[in-house]
Length: 161
Image (cartoon, rainbow, N blue to C red):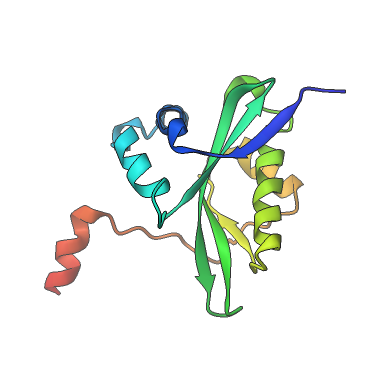
């Protein structure tokens, strides 16, 4: 029968768990030095009357083992909203058991239910296991596009030009 995987919408009581999973993800991605998120930050942004993002919690045998944070974006070409996956993380000890696939299936279900045009995300170019997993599901890398980021530290430079 396999291990029972459950995916549920995160609630405010999950803020500490989400921060813990964010830190685990950052450690895996060698980006721990960038994490400043707190439980209060997560509550303020995800669990208020007008949330800027949403989270799913993945469980295996009633134990939390992963999460996904996503938000709605918009495609001008499609003139329809879509979902952007900011982070998707499954603890290493349970990878390969279908948890990541279940998280993506739930996101696709949400997108389909809301008539969204696409689901988009990024992966670090060295994260071969993730890239191979996404390709196995039919996702296509967008090699013709480069991701750019302007961090808060650079905002003033842009405003002065």
